[in-house]
Image (tube, rainbow, N blue to C red; front, side, top):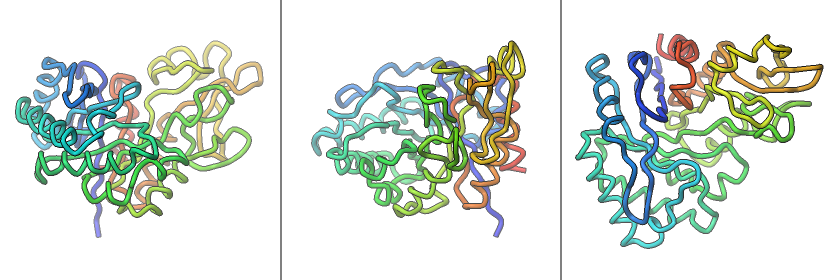
Length: 305
């Protein structure tokens, strides 16, 4: 059986002219902000630019992501009435902008909200219909199975986007997106561990998209891949090394761990892994962080060719 793989791009800002949409199958603009049962701060210009890319790639599916860090869906999922209202507003939004679907990025529900979030997703699916794409983003964390009913969510979503990054924010000198567990620089979680947690919870493998960061960290500061290449990777006293135990790239300076990032080879082996597990594909955060598209091209070459 020949499998095909999705490549989903998150776009945080204006979709750029240089972006080749033929390298992606799904693109989602981020973020619309949930407020009570409404959705605020949707940028019509950004949505228009996103949809214009269909002229280049008519097969491209264009979504909007609602939520993101620092937001919550507390009011939207607090009652059945609110869930239905919010779902109806999602449908109105898709109709207004002629979008192909939406992504719900509710990253940190509490364990007590586990059932409420599932019910919200059910109502959204009922409102938008089966013809629209519905995805959610889930953290790669040990607490994810406590906070998300992954098996049930897998029934209602087309894809679950597992955020396989931000394992360490630079406070412990560890990798932020290591493929496997290992010492001394491995984080307490890994891509492999996160994906297996979702699979063991009952999510079909083909409904999982594995996330990859188009950014890294120097100490506690996030840096785009463009900036890393321009100022840090084998420059200004920083030297790049490969961690064979964790399957991850990192930087040292003055002999000490100084940064963590992904590049072409680490992206390739992550693509190899998701194909091995027969996942639905991969996604990345985010498009504007690599303007020459070398990382996206690497994903495309390993997943779509």
